[in-house]
View (tube, one colour):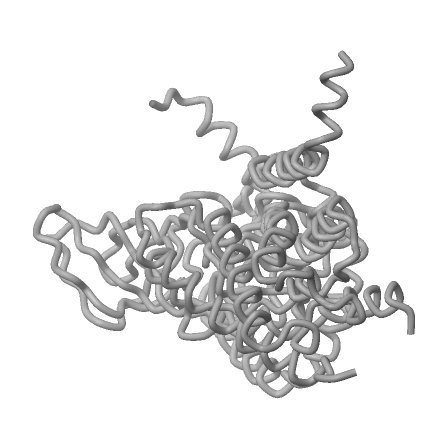
Length: 170
Length: 278
């Protein structure tokens, strides 16, 4: 299956899963897991930077259509698409990653770099999204609590996704 | 000029990032202007179609509870019929009452999208302007009040739920008649509880007292149940109680609601806004 087709199917399925299943899950009244931005995390290494950003904005806008939050998910995905190449550069060994694996995954990067990459990008995404959503820095403690709990929930889901859908060695 | 072009090409990615970011943030900050944000509005055909399909599946699983609450509400309405209180004698004079025409019309609508876990929660209804729903109409459910219609498209409507940081409902304590304002506490978001303010401290309250709409705003008919008094906290710094109320409506399981049209709303509103306010 070509990369493009795989990515398109992944795009649609992640958005549907997020809107119809994950948005209804609320942990302790504060945290909601967000799995859809794993689409940005898993875009191919070889995609140009401007392509990453445009696709991320489209992903965010699609989700915004369903959740009545104009532009918030789009802004958060855009920021992580912009930061993605920086993070990958920091985490990649001297010669760059093996270009045999086309997308970042546990197989291409190993567990620890991949988890670091996910943690950083997920945290950035949640900080941007929740700050825009609440936009009220008086209750900073609740904002931070929301960000951390949601990030933990999203990371658990990303871990499960990686274990299920990314074969370790190919 | 050439240096400018070279500069832009060197930092092209960054400029693209800025342009897209400004676009997204402009969407966020214009959220109250619905002409411009309408293309991201969930009351449009595409997302409405998906939500309808999903809601049809969900509807089947909730048939039993919906039926039970409908039966209870029917019983309550039947008990309010004037025929329940037959009078022994009929009136002896003719009584021309032009206000005797219908004031409130209830239109049922299906809820196809709902949320309870964000600071600003909205419901989407499968009934729009083509079926008589207008912006600003009140919405109530089988157990009590639900919200106010905010945006309408031909076949869908988006309702600002009671669980919204900007929502205020004019309310009244049934036992004493005091009126106050009900809102939702965003700092401690819980879909079951809200806050009743502006009740002075000299009023005695009991747990379980009913709080209903006062009818002052012309959005809701008077007497619609909002909730029950749950806890009264001591706030010694002010002359008012801080009352926590438990909402009568179960927001997490709403399937059907009624949109209320008040035929006298415009007249009342015009008269009220003609008075000077601060």
